[in-house]
Every structure is written in structure tokens, then in C-alpha cells.
Length: 390
Picture (cartoon, rainbow, N blue to C red):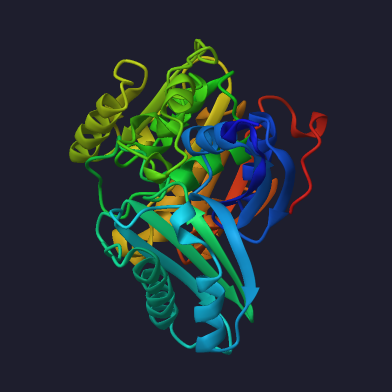
């Protein structure tokens, strides 16, 4: 049997709140045995599926390939468990490597200690076999190893992605506190927008939401701009197979509507245009310098998603007025639109003065945020049945 056709377990990591979205992505991609976990989704596939997952998944941070699971309640058990894996199957003494650890265990206090003992077990095995050891490179390793220790269960995985998949490669510049690309894509997919209507971000900053929307609209894989993936350094890497997957543009499509990004800052719009150019999306997104109060929608219905400033980016005594202005503008000019707003400031969201038809809890890094949908009805509200709140 060809190596590329052998199926194995894989785990895609994501942000809390995006697990179901990621599972849907994997099902559409053709993955088997898809199961939702906490901040992750497990699935089965061959090398081709692993390559596709890294290239195509919009809401995944990492794609891991588990290679060993064992119990560890002490330094000795950890060392022995790591030593039981034949590391020469996965890389050579000439490869550099690094270890990433996630530890939530009463038996181990520090993730750095777990990484250090695991490194010792790996290099000792190579030294005994080949009288030579591979080097650790924390900055630019050829091989990435992930160790997840929960209670006394240790799962060891090969990290097929390398750099986090949110680092698409197109965003070379950004404004202050830009939204994560994976979170942005997840917000768009959660909204149900599929490229069949207009898309607007009236406070776009460095352009992440409009760019991710354009990638969805034209069905462009988000990983297409990355310089490399970690699996390209694996011993069983099939370069011909990956090249075939990478160059397959049979799923590309046309887009008949508008994607609009606006911001009150001319500097932000300059950066957004640069990032769109890096993503080869020049002329596919309309960026404009405009305050929200002066923003009006194009003809036709659509989706508006925004990440408005609050707290550190706007004085507290102005928050109420600012968010009231948002609500007023939406009611006056955006009938027929679904409007989604994300914020970690619940009071600010209340100032909008509209009743959300849906609420989702998301995390922007460690910050808990509320992502709320406001349906701006084009006709009488009595003729429409609002969704239940989550």
C-alpha cells in the first residue's frame, strides 16, 4: 500500500467556540471520523488529507499527527514514554527540532521541564543509535514535536503545520491589536455568509475580515501564501502529491457581489490595501477612508461584520455615544442586512440599543468576547421569526 494512502489519526486545533465550524470544514474537505473536542477536532485521513487540511482549513491553528500516548506521573515515566517512540522513523540526526508543550497536570508543574526531559529522551536515543544527536532550534526548527499532558495522559504528536496556521503570509503590516485571521474566518463562517451577497466591514483596521471574506468568496485556500509547512521536512513527504494539491485550482469560483472595507483611519486603509495586494486581491476588495456615520450600503442585501473599538482605543465617557451612533446608523440605513458585532465589552454592546437574535461566545486569544447578530429587517418585524438566542 502506498504511504500516502494509509489513513491515520489527526487533530486540528482551534479557538474555543469554533470547534463546530472547524468540524464542518473538515467534513466538506472529505475527512473521515470527524469528532468535536475541546478547542480541537479529531479526524482520520491520509497524507493527502493532511496536506489539504493545512492548505485549506480556515479555522485551524495547527494540524497534529499523534504518534504516541502513554501514562506519565513522574519524570521517569515521562522519559521512558518518550523513549519508547522510535524517533528515527520521523527525522534524522541532521534535522533540527523543537518541542511545544501544553501541560495541565498535578504531576508536572512546568511545561519547560516537560519539554527539557522530552528533549533529553529524544537526543539520548539518537546518540545511542548513531553516536550523534540532532540539534534543538527554537527559532526555525525543521521538525516540530507537540506534547500534550493532561492529568497523567501524555499525547505526543508530530506538528505538521509548523508556524500557526493563522499566519497566512499576506499580513505583513497591521494596525494596533489586529484580529486573528483564524478568528476572523470563523466569525465569517459562523455568520453563514457564503459569498452569495455583499460583505461589509465598516471598521476594518488592517483589513483582515474583508481579506478573509474574499478568500472565502473566491474559494482561495488560506494557506496558499505561506512559504512552508512543517510536513515538508518529514521523511515521508511526498512532494509530487503536495504539488498536485497545491496547484489544483478546480474549486475556484467567481464572485458577483461587493466586499467593502472602511475605516476612519487613512493609515489603516493604506495597510489594508497593502495586505490585500499581498494576497493578490487587489481590485477584489473596495477599501475606503470613511467614518461609520457616513457609511451606506451598496444595493442588495448582505452581511456586515465589525470589531468596533472600545476601552483602550476610545475614551470611556465616549463609548455610550459611539455605540448608540452605531445602532442608529444600522436602523436607518442597513435594512435587509445581518449585522454581526464582536466585543469583549458587554456594556458597549448594550448601548447599541438593538436586541440580538443570536449570541456566541468566542475568544480572541485569552479574551472572552461576545459575538452578536442583529437582524435588520427590511419589512415588518412581525413577518419574520427571530432565531432563538444561544
